[in-house]
Length: 133
Figure 1 (tube, rainbow, N blue to C red):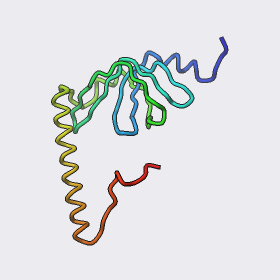
Figure 2: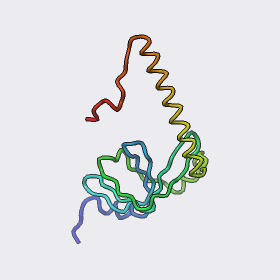
Figure 3: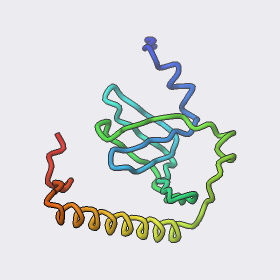
Figure 4: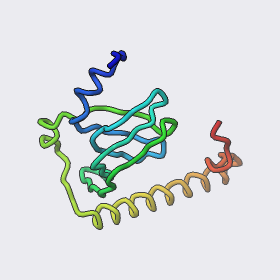
């Protein structure tokens, strides 16, 4: 077997949990099984973690393939310190409802901001009308 730089550390990391932050804001936690030069990832026993305030909920996702262009952050989770977090785990239904309420509150605040600016003769282009590149 030929030695490739970085493979030894990858083999050591294979049984450790990793956190992946995606470009769309989602957070995935799972065991890193594969990575390539483009940062394409394969995660095993993956959960999608949703945070709202001091609460979180995990949605099981199984095996998850992530294209490298969507990866913002990849980091190892220290399992010994994971249980020391001040966050409270809640059911999937409860966290999804809290996330919906939080998103609705943000949308209403954004509408008020746009209305106030419009009354002053200013406008901000909507994010969906801007090019990503």
